[in-house]
Length: 152
Image (cartoon, rainbow, N blue to C red; front, side, top):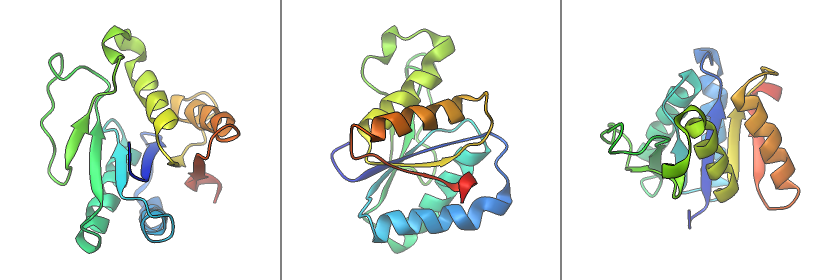
């Protein structure tokens, strides 16, 4: 993650109603913060909305890339690069991570290696919320910037 990079984390049941806010946050990260690399998973509604917002932004900002985060080894669960994405990424060392915690561990890896986090998390007992709390603790030690669209 050499360039200014941003990861997305949010709940599966994110509503289409929040898309304009998400799209504006992506635009702000590109134009104000110089983000050129966005990374997103593909397991929930928020992930789909985030990918769509970046794909739209790429039409105006061709320097921007969109990467799909793979929590499972590509040979175990092959996933071709979806339309609109530039690449896929499988974090190093994930081969030794038990399957039941692979998504959580891959998400945590991304938080540890990006400059920005755009979140949409509110459920108290959820992996997304726990990751935002983890990221908040990390931001005290690093320059990680976090925006939670739910609190806005």
